[in-house]
Amino acid sequence: MTIHIGAAKEDIAETVLMPGDPYRAKWAAETFLEDARLVNEVRGMLGYTGTWNGHPVTIQGSGMGMPSLSIYANELIRNYSAKTLIRIGSCGGMQDKVKVRDVILAMTASTVNSPSSSLFKELNFAPCADWGLLQAAAQAAAKRSTPTHVGGIYSSDVFYDERPDLNEQMVRHGILGVEMEAAELYTLAARYGCRALAVLTVSDHLGTGEALPSDQRERSFGDMVEIALEAAFS
Image (tube, rainbow, N blue to C red; front, side, top):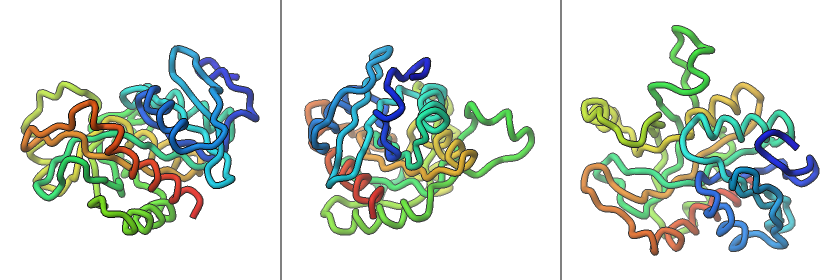
């Protein structure tokens, strides 16, 4: 048990999927895991553990933004010995070729600032995904009809962004989408020798303004969860 996770050590699997929304954790656990049981509800940040194809899996909400994810990822790794952490979440598309409902596999995650930034001082550390997970996820995605893109994303430290000039540079440099957590997850995984990946569903598009209605989000997120699970155990 930690400050933010009320589970016993044996209640958390070595493989953890991390959606930002705790209710998405509930939905994913009930939809994709067998014998899923609630193992954490501290501060309403729900976590469930069950099995997928016989493999133990925990699905733990991380909250919004890198500071919140950093808390849960640190505790999962340091106190519960998690070895594989895969973010499953939504993002905003930034390139014309990226459409709403597409899946993005984040090879790298650029950011202006993260909770780990002060460690590196003048160094611009380049957070990246685990190659084995990325390769396995790409192979899992290829078996599906959902268009999938592999490349760099941008982890913003704010939701209500007032830097259109920065977004223009992200687009100019080929960034596929924007979200708020992956850069810190990748940095922590590098620090502690764990595997990490972000598998993201495009829920809206910064260029076109198109967005998925809330009642269609869960149905569109199923492929993302399946890709993450297949990648974890390939």
